Image (cartoon, rainbow, N blue to C red):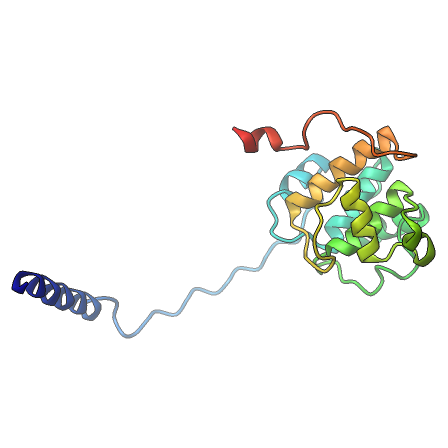
Length: 196
């Protein structure tokens, strides 16, 4: 018993000595932060690669990703204003919908679901037909089609999620969503790496 007390006492003294001999009381001032360089226009592939690692997808990321999806490879510009104009012209963005949103604001799952429903031309169930694609109703429809995972409509979308949503939306656009949920061939993008 005394041996244990001795070990505990010595350990406490050594720990206290380590705290006193730690860093000096006066710290050096941090170096001034360097100014960030302006964002450079990237190719579509590089954009999606960088988007996959973002913690939160922004309104600008969503607008550019949907513009790439809808334009099918044609160059429409990478800035937020050009993407908004293109999506409004195609009828995907309701008038004034993204006018209130800043380019750097994170996108929510409900807003993304509304954009996906408009992109796919989904009519939805009776409530969505009556009230239009409200965020919660659109998210339920997208969850049914397995485009977005079910959840709360106010949760933020991560960059990797947005890449997956664009991939599944593109697959559904090519197969169609007329009367039934089509069987998508293979697994969602990135599923092979996750199972290894």
